[in-house]
Image (cartoon, rainbow, N blue to C red; front, side, top):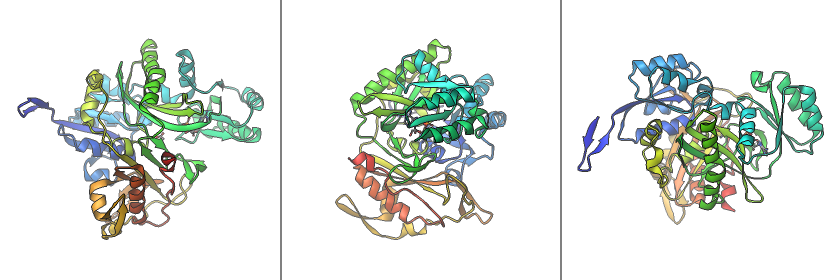
Length: 454
Ligand code: AMP
Ligand code: GLY
């Protein structure tokens, strides 16, 4: 620990471990890298982009015992968990048992994400607004209930299913297939209990509350684009893009979300014996009547929402995470500072995603260096200058091949984020960057951000 400056601001000198290896974890590492407290970042398993600012260690996020060994061996001062799977396996409980400091909810607290059944019952117990629902452990009862409902009918596997366990059935026939899929084991253990709920109309938003058990502060609300094709058509994906801030989440609406959803959740978790520390991701529907209702809770940052929310955060992420582990978020009670303007992220995916896709396809950034004139607002600039000033290419599924060349290594390959004074400018910049990144079969949506410009 060293002291700096006249104000005697204490600078902690820390080794940090980030668990995960997607675009979200790249955004977390990128933000931590700016902290004066952080001397070294380890990331498990990381990716080729993260490797530029951190030491990547090839340990799976599910191998929590080996992650604890790594934290001990490398004298890690703070571990930040990006991935839900590690949380559902109890990484936080294990690390705490070994005396290691870690940011994230315990296994029981993270149940808000890993059991939709638990989350729904919890919301009912604590009067937290959500869609009416019923849960079933038996196929026949589920089928009979679905038959009695007006389509669209929402069918959800209880457990973690990589975002694929939800079907919005437009007819009873579709609902039937989804119910059979769950009980026939398509999602393994996750589908043993089926939640059937009412369809909600409105605008979806992601609100991230950073929680220390008692207090919560929110990041800038973001909107995710979950469907594969423009106009919100096609299959659900992990997320094809995001932007922030979201114009219809006014400060009043955010206040209402905090009062009606976030604080009752924290207080409910205290009452039930599982104080919630870490990120509470509230996936919300703002209904046509202007009421926020919970679609789902997650126990970590959204991906790709983190790629817009963190670049807009004008605070030291390490300090915030540290304060959470100290139970000391109260010092941010005025709220977190954020940069003005907007951020927009376009996900570039492999052709074929979310079904079958190839890996190992070379990725070329060389055309980004061409000094192309583009118009951003009123000021013509070169693309190179824009990238340096306002663009961030987050890596999601990338690796280096045996010749050290950058190649694709996943379904979602890159998250191209642009920051600008307005959402429209951020959109123009992000798409200019996307056009000039080359790899065979690349696919991205062309309408990210449109919903924020009505
Ligand atoms: P989930 O995994 O629970 O977030 O669901 C995936 C997606 O399905 C959500 O992002 C929504 O777009 C949609 N969805 C889930 N539940 C509902 C609902 N009750 N009404 C309308 N859309 C829903
Ligand atoms: N973008 C949705 C999620 O991270 O679950």
